[in-house]
Length: 390
Ligand code: SOE
Image 1 (tube, rainbow, N blue to C red):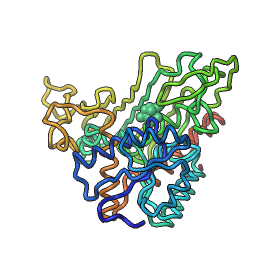
Image 2 (cartoon, rainbow, N blue to C red; image 1 turned 180 degrees about the horizontal axis):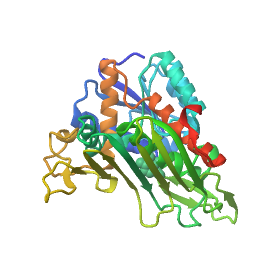
Image 3 (cartoon, rainbow, N blue to C red; image 1 turned 60 degrees about the horizontal axis):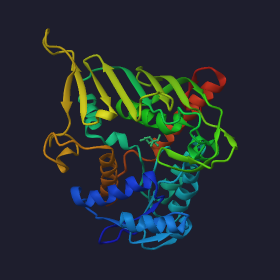
Image 4 (cartoon, rainbow, N blue to C red; image 1 turned 90 degrees about the vertical axis):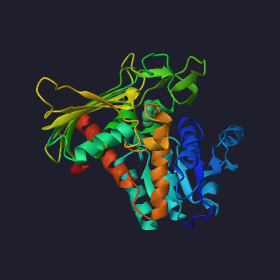
């Protein structure tokens, strides 16, 4: 767990979509945030030597490995950053914890709550810092929503309404890749998109008591994929079709511990929506609304505004008083998706340096997996499920 005097040495596993987002963030964090420990891009890891070598050169990593076991064994690595598909998270994290490396892991934490609990247990036993990549918490406008709620500006919370809409699987000819394979992804839109909504709901409203849900797979088989990066995939060109073993859409209701009610919708079949994550929170004193594709803005309604002037006001969360915004550009010079990763990794580095718990951490990852599993159980049994029973 030794932390190098001249910084924190990262070992990143994965070099595609999330690997690129994390590599970019680690460079930008040094440049814009002056963290207490410089983030060192020490080694990147991937199975394909040509691919990982090229990524190391392009993204600016000092070295590369083709085996994650070898990466974890290296004495010059302080942090293992996991950005590989979901079925690899548990084994990597457990091994990293045993070797006293701090861990940053992409979401969802694991394939199911059982695996997630093992990861939390090993991380706690090792006494290392652990964080999960729920990056949307770190948009300045989302942090502002949290501040308003914490200050009581929304009063008693009644509703959370979350939607996460994408459409990249709409075409039945889009190939079956790792994201449509239950053995690799664990679930479909449910874990991939629903996990973000669940985390935001826990962050803003609190813990869940019970859920009832339904999941659906609209297209049951697809042509075989040659490869997949980000949300694009190519076909092998063969006739062969593969079964889709995950959900295409997942909808559920919840009751929170504090009595508020929530509705959640995650789908890859919402034509026209590319990364349409949005939520609204309604309380006795007001409401907030957020849409990711307009991520610099927060809408806020205050019931105490004078009659005749009431309405949602549009706040552009780019002023120095807004969380993280002052590290970037002058007011009104907006930021984007990649900045959320810079913010979360900044917080991670600060937690390591100051020896304080990371937020959100593996405990939050476990709670999220518990809710994901409870919804799946509810969908299978067509009934309400108490989250604590899972
Ligand atoms: C793909 O659906 C994806 O990239 C998710 O995996 C991310 O977590 C989300 O931020 C955007 O969509």
